[in-house]
Image (tube, rainbow, N blue to C red; front, side, top):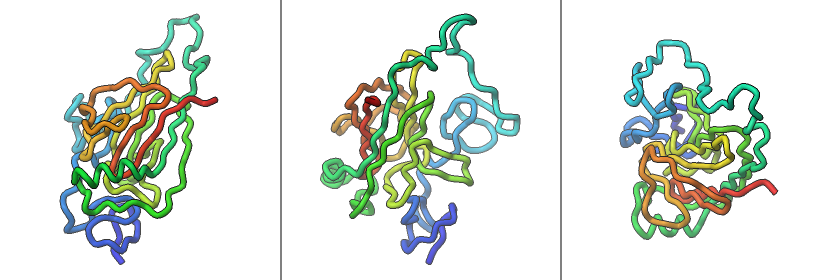
Length: 216
């Protein structure tokens, strides 16, 4: 039985059954399977970030206070009335669309026989959608590498951001298979934040849909 770079045992010889990562001798890992730059959150490799030039040999930068409220002003984030919830599930309709259009990796993506739905409260400001990788330092808040994993999802696939006013956006991080919204076939442009609302549906990988709602 083969073992992937993350230590998962897998019966497949090309991609890990658990996390979907390429095994030795398999096609090259997709370009989004990189660590996130601690300064700008863009997937990168090597010592210097190709986006902002951050030197990974230096200590991690302190949290940005650009959006912090003025001294004496109320803590908007702390008093935010809206709490977003992400509902993750296996979407047969989306899977059928991917298969019909012969999307990337469609031939190796099978719809799971059982996939328990998950609800994740978005309490904070940033939430990475992807697959955990200890070796690359990627720890997604919405981890889609839990078995049965969707092999079409990149390690650093997309990022949800909650603004100080409670608004929510999604940004595709340059994933191989893209991120689409509300049943459309056109993928979102990489690195461009797109506003979301209650009821928005994010489609990633080969069969994963994330529905956005508010905590009632």
